[in-house]
Image 1: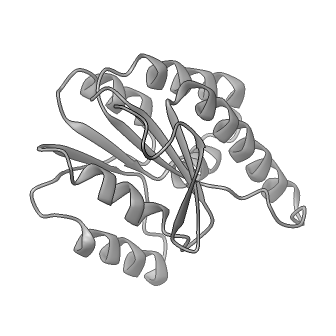
Image 2: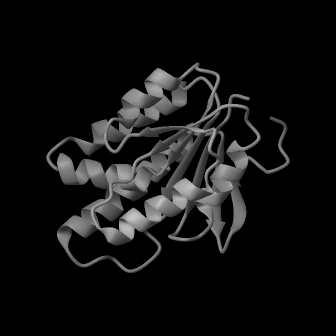
Length: 177
């Protein structure tokens, strides 16, 4: 199967669970984790995610070099699940705030559009609330929105998850693979 799926949703919407369910149909899965544990609460979240994943999945921790990791895994025959693009973008903004994010988004979109294999991407939809207070918060919401839009264009399937229920925005659950 050569499908690229983008799963969007809010915090605790069920997007990671859906992504993991989609990946379990594959014989070989590489899970790319982008989270960095900055505090005890994030450490607990990471541990929860680790415990719910199948033990035979390969794990690649990739807080910054996602584009390079995807290039290396393209054509490997494995399903690649990236969880999540929101934390990856946060890491980019934190570690390299002066970089050209238009270029960063374009490089990632290009690698994803050329990816050879099944790719499942998880990302938060953060722009459905109030405009955040603080410049950095607004920059993050803008960058996340633009990243989601750009990746939705290059993915075969886009699913929005709310309350654990998937809504297919592009492609469909019964479409031929």
